[in-house]
Image 1 (tube, helix red, strand yellow):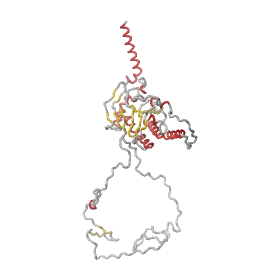
Image 2: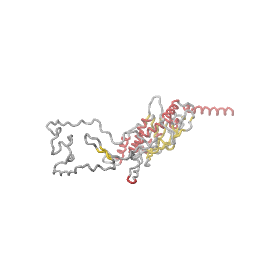
Image 3: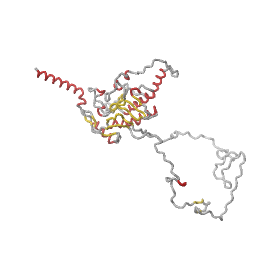
Image 4: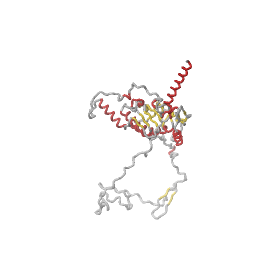
Length: 408
């Protein structure tokens, strides 16, 4: 009897274990897709992500099941280069001029004695004189003649005294002189304005070039695969930094992430489909820190000041172009405090962007209207002073527990 009870208990435990494995066998007992290895290798061979002290390749991660990556990278900073500016070159002090000599970096004539040449008269050969020898004393020069004072109201002549006038017609047609044979004469053709310029003149300053961003620190350091590191670099350079400069006039210097590589199912559910975090192919960003110390929290900035809302929505809008999955506050209850981005490949080719992306200018203007209505600003048409509710939806409820790294 006792033996039968023991076998019953053992059989029950085995059955429960098999049922549990059946619910999550799609990734705990599955194999990793071959395209992931090829994507990592192709990214590294392309040079899009170079190994630096901030990006160190570590030992391959494998298992359990399909989890892991063959060439994981420990990332403590994204992007590279320096901020674009016009004062990058250090100022070079002027060279010393001892005894009135020229600076050393100026060109110096080293051909010996300098000789001066006198222009030859028409039809004659040039006559040279050493620099130290005076002109022949036997040659006489006419004394200088004083210019007669011009009469009041008459223009000054530009021609030297005693020389024939030039052959061009620059002095013809001046006030008090003869009429210009072309513009002032009787046979003057009718004036026609010059043709309009089809293209505007080029803008001042250096030519347009891709924005070069500064290195953005990642805290804590994230373990990621090469393809998403490359996509994050591009996103930071083309979208995040321009949005920060547009809304705050300061660049982003640090981002706070709450989940990178994590072997689990979606939303932390062991019975759900495997998450892209299990392959280091996703990142959850909770905060953007600017150079002046301003911290833009996704949880509070999503419904914060107009500038914070505009920045975060511009960032999300661009992310929907660079990644295949973007989930921000409002997508579901699990993403109330971060923006999730990944490069998941779907057989249908569909991209997911939730909630629907809206340009930052639209969201910021909407926030300003809400503020004006709250304070009864008469400058806003139809504004009615009513009770203003701070909470916009239950999905941003502060009573929800804080997100646990990896549970998205």
